[in-house]
Image (cartoon, rainbow, N blue to C red; front, top):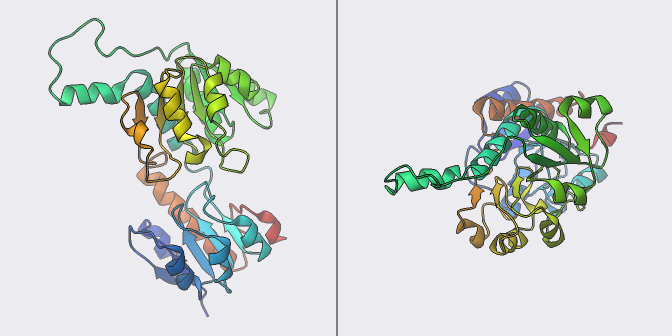
Length: 324
């Protein structure tokens, strides 16, 4: 008998075709998000689930899925999944790292440039018919070339951002639990420093850490106060890494030069004070929003789900210890 797989939301069609070869697929082809109650009902007969960041795979939901063997996430982050509860049941959790590295790094640097050169403000100024003439100080921004970029978290994406910064002649410092290998750091011209020194030295601070208990509100009042005056904060990692109300207050106080955010604490809600500011660039979580990348993410999640259900090793297990 073919295993049953729940696909919780709309995905690219190649993923469904791949699953249907060896599985019975319950595909919820919708943009809506299921609440925990409906999700639990749908999972009651499923052996596998292909899910997204919006799906609440809590301990309670997992407990109501007695046949579940694999949770396959279409994302790198998986803070919506109670991995401990899954591991206790020897349920494999997978994600899709690597494939979105370059797209997210591109978006990060686009945000850096947009915030530095005030591009959203300039575009609105033009579209609103307010541009009358060239003026020597019209919408002047700040330098990027030659400035110091601080990268918090130096994994795949952090290093990809450093490669782009090198092309702009930026000085790069990074903070990470473990220093990168010497040859990697040397090739990128990146210097490992403590977080407090990074905040003090950097003209731009870019966040690339996973969301854990240790990184939740990693950037809050003390860190914002420690940042170099006029610096710009960029977050393309996970929303709760930044205390948004503290950020809004720091901007009000003139401690920072601006911010650029693709992720938020309570998506899709945005802290109202941030919405009102021209010195904050806001995007709707589009870091990996490249058609080829998102399609491949869906396919990778489907492939790993299928692999586990047929006794094969998945490519990207989050909790590999359950495979032993």
